Amino acid sequence: MRMLGRMSYLLRLVLPDHPGALGAVATALGAAGIDIVSLSVVEHTPDGAVDDMIVLLPPGGLADRVFTAAQSVPGVTVEALRPFLADGTGIGDDLELVEALAERPAEAGAVLTDLVPGVFHADWALLLEHLAPGDVRVREASVGAPNLGGDDLGVPERVRFPLPWLPLARARSLAPSDGEFPARWEAVNMELAAAPVGHDRLALLVGRPGGPAFRSSEIARLAHLAGIAATLARTSDPAR
Image (cartoon, rainbow, N blue to C red):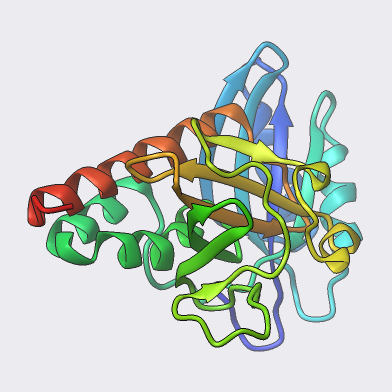
């Protein structure tokens, strides 16, 4: 959600495991003129709860204000803060995505690719198919997905650089060393996660520039959603 003159951000926090921590953060943000638009729990760790907040700054407010307010609460760690450009519409959680997949099972791959960025506060997703060594094709791309294709006229488009992590046996996060990714991705701190969709030669790649890093609970959820999409696609077309 955005309002004229106001900027929204994705704020990931690690909260200490004691009562009142979340309330104290909300109070500190409110005192700084920062509104909390939404809150989701990412996972619980020995260090405390990991929460994602979408926050809205006042007109002219600087991102540093969010850092200062959140970290004024003892024991709170800001793990990441980045601009959040979503307009508050569309898919926002796992259940909504599953419902969308169930409505269009024959197009499960396209639906998954298009909607999964909203579930994980990511910017884009690509559905990639590994046909042979050095031959990976872009089967589907979400709005805002980077162009990874080369100069050939192949359809689907062939990825122009090596992706040695394909075929993909299990869902995982990816590091720059896992492929010859575009140089600009490192500059924008692009966090990546991938999951097989039905088999190891079809994989969903999700990108989140500026972080935060994909946590293990998010990787597990991504794997689960990709598995559901693959199952629905097979059910709608047994020939697959």
